[in-house]
Length: 351
Image 1 (cartoon, rainbow, N blue to C red):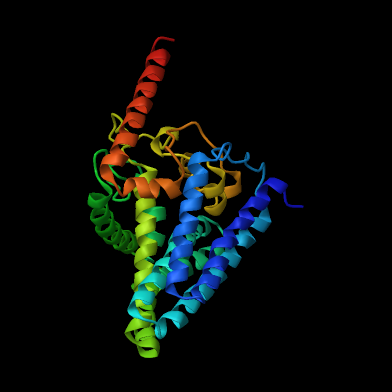
Image 2: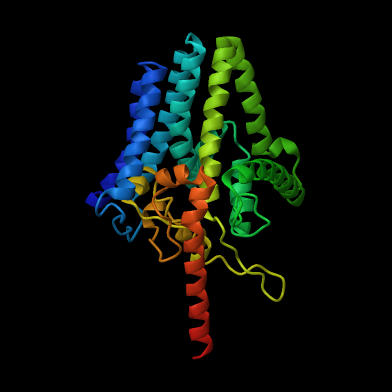
């Protein structure tokens, strides 16, 4: 029997189903509903009493929750197909609005769940992760995130970790270019190590699939279909990389005397335990525990006492877009966390 507290993760299906309905009403309706849902989630996270804490994790993984993510993968493909059908004969303004509404779901949830499925040991789940990332024209995430970001997070070697004082708008070009370049370098290195050719590379085949889908869409639906798909992908990727910006902003792992990086610890990722956004995003905001135990299923992640964001991701996405506001909120939190770490170190040194 599913635990009652875990039924909140059924909210995962709410956004794609609502988006499917709204796409049928046209671009304006879809865009208005998207903005409204975003505002509601951000508002509940920030102002609803008691919404800042999620229920405690499961003692053991609940298998049915993996099924929820698998069903979502199907819903995303259906949603993109519905968007394409609506965009093919729409006005250009509606094409853009539809792409924004669909990209909000494929970025906020689709990439989040691809990330979770990609951490699974199941071949089916990893295949679904590749499908989801290919559907937003960003398959190199499947290499860079697991082999690049996780070992290097919260260091200056990681293009997906934002540095203190770096605005979102300076971070985006650095992470987009750096992640793409490093993913191909990592894939080439692994193929050499395994003594395999590029024909064995899922990154190559997924990238070719992106080109093939682009050509097919142009032939089937003309410029509108092609622009819709690439624009919803761009919105999805913008959300992904903005979340990356938030997750490790200004946090830095030390270099040990031997030149190695210190192990990833609770203080190397920002956390938020807001129940609505955590329910919609499969506990992604319990980010320190995820990095420290990358194979843990999302429903078993702990709310650790690491650095805490001012609100959930829905609100932080908006805050990060305004650098002075973001810096004004985050830099005192960075200083408070650093002071706490120094105080703990001094206590330990006196024992």
